[in-house]
Image 1 (cartoon, rainbow, N blue to C red):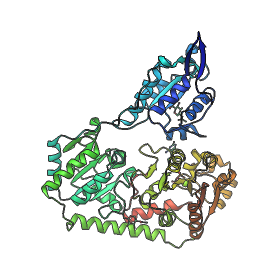
Image 2 (spheres, protein in one colour; image 1 turned 60 degrees about the vertical axis):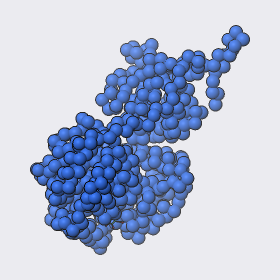
Image 3 (tube, rainbow, N blue to C red; image 1 turned 90 degrees about the vertical axis):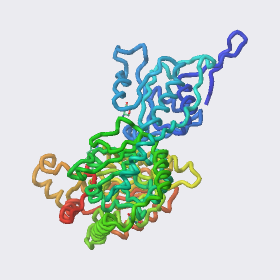
Image 4 (spheres, rainbow, N blue to C red; image 1 turned 45 degrees about the vertical axis):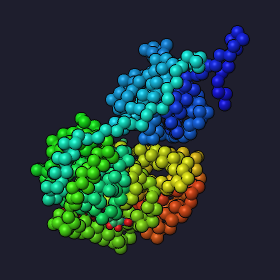
Length: 547
Ligand SMILES: Cc1ncc(C[n+]2csc(CCOP(=O)(O)OP(=O)(O)O)c2C)c(N)n1
Ligand SMILES: *[C@@H]1O[C@H](CO)[C@@H](O)[C@H](O)[C@H]1NC(C)=O
Ligand SMILES: *[C@@H]1O[C@H](CO)[C@@H](O)[C@H](O)[C@H]1NC(C)=O
Ligand SMILES: [Mg+2]
C-alpha cells in the first residue's frame, strides 16, 4: 500500500496526505484497534488506510450489526453537491445528533485529527456512548501538505471524581440503620471496572446484592451474597437500596410500587448528575466515579468496623425464596417430555459452558430465561439486547468480541444464545465469522417463532384453512427452519439438535473446536413459553424483563 503521495516541488519534497489517511492515522493516535464497516466508494480507501495504519478492519454484512460493534464514522455526499440532490445526500450530522453523544463533520482536512480526538474522548468520558463523525465524500481522496496538519495525541484516560464526603457518611448511616438492605449492581459498575473494590465492599459489609442484566459477573453470580434467584422478593421488600451505576428505568421497574416498597430509601451512586432523582428522589446522592466512590464506602465501613449480620430474617427469607425458585427451574429443566423446553436447554448449557466465556444473548424468552439460568463469574462477560431490547445486535457483538479475544494470549470463548427470530436479524454475519475463522458458538433456541410458534403438523393443517398471511399467527416463523444449514453453507459446523444428548454432544464438539464457528439449531417445544408462564404465575415466579 502506497503511504504518502510524494510530489517534487522545486527541488524540495512536499509530503502530502489524503483525508482517508488522516482519518486512519487520527483513529490510530487515539489507540483505536479495530474498525468495523461495510465499504463502498469512497469508503474503501479509508478501510485500506486503516489497515495501513495498523488498525484491524472487520468487514461486516448487516449495517445494524456494524452499529452494534460501535461504528464511529459514516460518509455523505461531496460538499459541492450539497442541496443539489447528490447521491446519498442526507442531513446525517443532524439526524445522528439525536442518537449519539457527539455528531460532527470536520470542516477541512486539517480539522480531522482534533474532531476524531473529541469524538473518541466524548465516547469514553462520563457515561459512555456512541459518537458520529461524518466525512464529506470529496474529502476522502483530497490531499493536504502534511506539515499543515496539527496532529493530536491520544486523549487522557477519563478523569476520576470522588463523592462528597457528607453524602458518603449519610449513605453509610442509612445502610447501618436498614433492616432489609439491598445492593443493586448495574452495568455502570462493569464499565467503571469496579469489580475488585465492589467485591471487597460486598464481603466487608456483608450486604446482599443483585445485578442488572449487564451488571452480571461484576461480583460473580454464584457468590453467596447474590440474591438474583429471589429478585422480585428482594426488590419488593428492601427498605434501603444502594444503587450502583444502574438507572431506575423499566428494567428496575422505575423503583416504584408495586414492584418496590413505597417507602424504600435509595442511595444513588452515579457519575451522571442528571440521573439523580429519576423516578425516585434519592435519600443520598453520591456523584462520582463508581470505583472511587465504592472505595470511599469501603474505607468508612472499615473504619467503623460495621458488618451487616448474616443471621437476620431478611437473609434467611431471601435464601429460602432463592432456593425455592431454583428448585422450580430445576424441576422444569429435568421434566421428562419428548421435546425440550427453555429450562432444559439452559440447564444443560450452563453445565458445559466454560466459566470465563463471554455470553452474548438476544431474544425474548430466550434472553430472559437464559439470563436467569446462565451464570457469569466475570465482569463485562455478558452482552445482550440492553435497555432498548434491540434485536439484531447479538451477532455483531459476537464478531467484535471474538475478534478481540483472538488477539489475546488466552482468548475466551464467545457463546451467542439467540432466539430464532433474533438470529434472523443479522443472520448473514455467520459469513463474517466463517470468513475470519472466528470460533463463535451460536446456539439458536428455536421455538418456531417470536415468543412462541406452532409445530410443523399444525402449520400444514393451517395452510389448508386459507391464505397463511390471513390465518397464521403473527408470532410464527417457519417451523423447524434449518438455521444450522446457514452455518454449513459457509463452511462452519452446523448441528440440528432435538434431544438433551444431542445438545450436550454438539456443544462439547463445538467448544473443543477453536478454528471454526458452530451453530446449534436447538428445536424446542414451540409452546414452551406458554406452559412456563402458566407455571410461573402459579408459583409467582416472574421473568423480570419481558420485552
Ligand atoms: C429491532 C427490533 N425489532 C423488533 C423487536 C420486537 N421483538 C421483541 S423480542 C423479538 C424476538 C423474540 O423472538 P425470539 O428471538 O425467537 O425469542 P423467543 O422469545 O421466541 O425465545 C422481537 C422481534 C425488537 N425488540 N427489536
Ligand atoms: C448505522 O449508523 C449510521 C450512522 O452512525 C447510520 O447512517 C446508519 O443508517 C445506521 N444503520 C442502521 C442499519 O441502523
Ligand atoms: C449459578 O449460581 C447459583 C447461585 O446464584 C447457583 O445456585 C448455581 O448452582 C449456579 N449454576 C451453575 C451451573 O454453576
Ligand atoms: Mg423464538
